[in-house]
Image: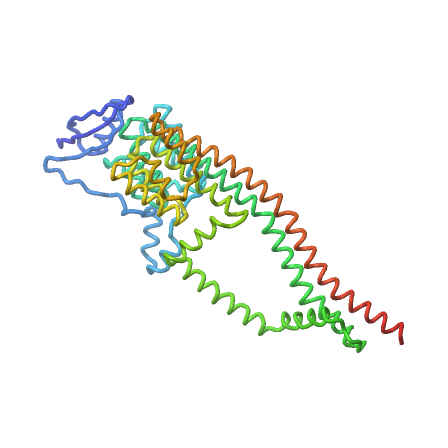
Length: 431
């Protein structure tokens, strides 16, 4: 009978190794779970052949893979590309897995149960593939690393740290809380932008409708009366003539498309991306919101990683990848290089001149007291509260501004029409 060597962990995190005489790998895993252990590695060293039945990195479900194989590569990428889950979806998935493991359920059984739970945005095939990889001897973090569309580097590294420390359930719960918080911040951003977006869309629609459908009818009336029109009305008529011309829309579409292409090229270039990110941070009202959001992200991600045992250099590298701003990315990279040279975290952050003094001071205090994750959590809470306040202020400021802009636009249209009507009335009275 084949022999399988294994490495597993007890519930208290203690590492256990041993050898089992069982027919196959599945039987070895079943026996390990019956012993109340969490399997980490199962191997067949003595002449056994281990067949990797798991699909390659990022592969989808077997049924989908079979269907995708029948399509050309271009169509296969278009129709079978896996969607990246939303923050709230990954938070729900993580919370459900943590609850199952906390109840005492073995990992493979918990992953099997996850295939039957409602995890919106996370296909059941993801849990099924994780279970297969774990059954074949991979750790949970390694199995998640094989699905990078679903699980980010931050997620995988935190799970790995949880496995190594024997606190996987606690780590998963912290991850769930982390993604819940970021989902809330994202929702606040979206809700703050809904009102101005709707007002802008409606305003543009009203102006286009007036210029293309209503204005030509007024033009027929004015031309029939043969009265000299005021200058504002003449300009409005000329603009209306342009907007009803098909060539105007063709040229406008070409110009907008060309500008969009040039902008995307500029944005995707290293210098252009950095220039745009730097400009965002200097905007009058929106710049403060961008800065608060980035500071909160930096503090929250780094605190979560350090709290769960991820080494500081690895945590800084992951945080650098997560932050969506090139200016802050460069500052974090410089900080990582300085920390490698033995310096503290606060000193290189201060030298970058990107992060606020409050953050520098609290991190320095955290280093002196030996609680950098706690200091970063306090910073994240502070900046998230300030961000909520800034979003409310921005929303309250945008509403009257949008109303004024719409009133001015509609007022100009009415003034142009009414001034012509007054001119016609006066002309008739003089006649």
